[in-house]
Structures are given as structure tokens and as C-alpha cells.
Image (cartoon, rainbow, N blue to C red; front, side):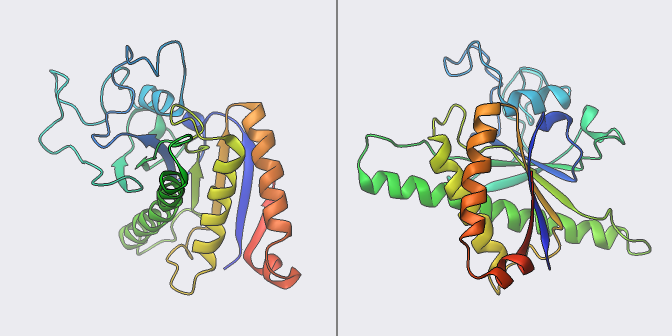
Length: 237
């Protein structure tokens, strides 16, 4: 199946997609604590999505006293991902978001040695592959629920630039890992992302957008032979 890979400037919390992705912590509390020094005076994707879900300064899964709810999902390891049903403004027809996938992105690990960096890069790659696996499972559920009619076509999965915020990844390296993870996962014979028609990256910051476009164009143009590239992805900026 040929997929559309699209890089676009925009606000992921106001983006039309079936599933959107955010970076969070193991308790899925994200930036529920606005006084945490990494969030002070800053805006990020998780905060924008939280606001769109009418949960400003609260966890996506907290009780009234701010503590994790009994049924709150937890991400067991770095690189893992969980699906959270969309709420609030995300459910409006112009956005149509049905789920938010929260993934536990590793720290950039710069200055901690080559072994630590390789481990972090592996975990960041797993954020993408695990998210793709989870998105395909959500698509399968949607198809079962709508057995009498076709699901929304195409199924759109939208990512931010994972790691390029408080996790402090270098923009170019984060882009390389993201593109490589998606290319490799979707071309694998055992890949389960065949039903995902479009994979979008949505960038609020122009500098990040420009760097990712350059990296994505370079990596796609040098991937395999011309026939392979034409059969795998349509590249749109």
C-alpha cells in the first residue's frame, strides 16, 4: 500500500486526523504541573492537546485531587505508547480526532557517552514503531465497529516532532530517527501499518519544520531505488 507522508506547519491540537500523538511521562500526566521548571514560560504540544481536551493543568487521567485515577494508564517503559480516547474540542467534526496516543520519549542523553546515546536513539525509534502498531490496532477496531460502512478514508495518523521539546533532542537527529523508523517499519514484511493511509508530521515551529523537511527529503530521495520509493510513499510538503 502506498502512503502519503506529509510535513506541514500547523497546530496539532487543531489538526484534522483520526489519531494524534503526544509526548508524555510514564503516568500520562504530561505538563499537568505547570510550575515544573521545564514548562515554565513555554508552550508545548502536550499542553495544547490537554487544553483541547478541556483538561488544562490536569492529567489526562487524574482524579479531582490531582492524583492518578485508579484506572489511569501507565506507560511501562521508555519507547512505549498508550491510547487515550479523545475528548473536548478534539471531537468536533472539523477535527474528527478519535484517540490521542501518548508515548514516553527518552531524553536526548547528550554528554552521557555513546552507549547512553545509542540506547536513547533506539528508544526514540521505538516510540514511532510502537505508535504505528497501536494506531493500526485502533484502525482495526474502527473497521469492526463500522462493519456496515467504510471507515474514514484515508486513515490519518499525525505526529509532532517527538523529542524536540523538553526532551532536548537535536532537531536534525530527531528527524533522522523519525524518518528511518517510519520507513523501516512500513516497509517491513511484518508491518501492521498497511491500513494507515496517511502519516503526517505537524510542526508549530518554522525552524523545526524547515529542518525536518530537509532531512525527510534527503532520506526519502536516497532510499532504495526509484521504483521502491514510488511504491512506498508520496511525499508532500
